[in-house]
Length: 207
Ligand SMILES: [Zn+2]
Image (tube, rainbow, N blue to C red; front, top):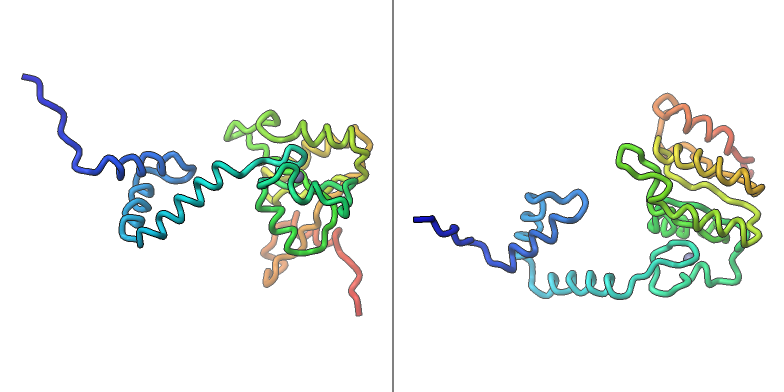
């Protein structure tokens, strides 16, 4: 006689949550279980708030059709702002980079979000990034300057090189963010690339 399958001792709701959580990047089965059991012990209204935030995000969040930023409105508030300089585009890897850069209050141009960076090892090539949108904007919108704001990593540098190659053919002024020195870093502990950029990006000292 065939054995009937062993009934699961866990609740279907808990299993479903663990299944869903384990589809997230960087969250394996064990982490998903840990998060689920944490939520089980948390006040119920906090868990409902988290679920509401995810539902609200899924229903209302859009991608700006101009720059690729995450936004509630399309175009995003930055692209819709006529007081910003629409002839200067700062290219970033992801929407959270815009949040960081905006906190400086030092930039009044617009942005373009690539939604990642080139990473051959992870099978992320030019087709996986929001590159065509950038080239289109530069061709059609009388863009004067493109600032490359990729992260200072090997993949970020590779992406910047690729973009520079594409953009140079369009006759636009190309710059990239000076990296500067991290606060507290000894000169002999930072990479040659960072140090070189710190030198090239140097500014006058205001007295
Ligand atoms: Zn936008």
